[in-house]
Length: 124
Image (cartoon, rainbow, N blue to C red; front, top):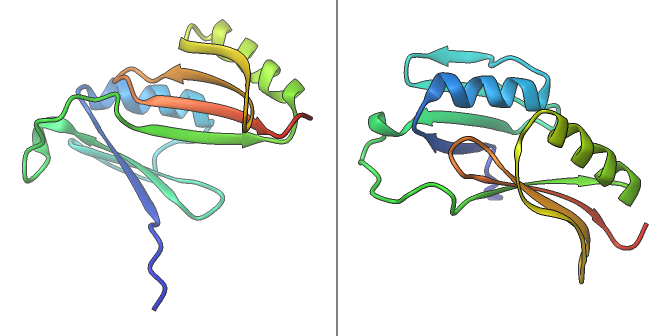
């Protein structure tokens, strides 16, 4: 049996704010929405879910910001273009575009402090 995750769940403080952020970021609306849970189905079949932190069972005591969603693009130019677009949207930037050993990357933060890494692998 092969076991692969098909849902990524982020715990959020303000579900409405986080949902609106990801709707703007991903360009899609949640397919499932309840007062404590929103789920976005991505084109690759994985779902990105947002769960209101106060409703998580068992409760979590961890603070946000220890997670990272990574988005890979096929060129450094596209990384720079997305960086400029996210700056225009006033998305918080943790690391501007930088060359690192695995490629070219920048890191932003969602409203709950989850890291959003955008990278072009290699030196394209």
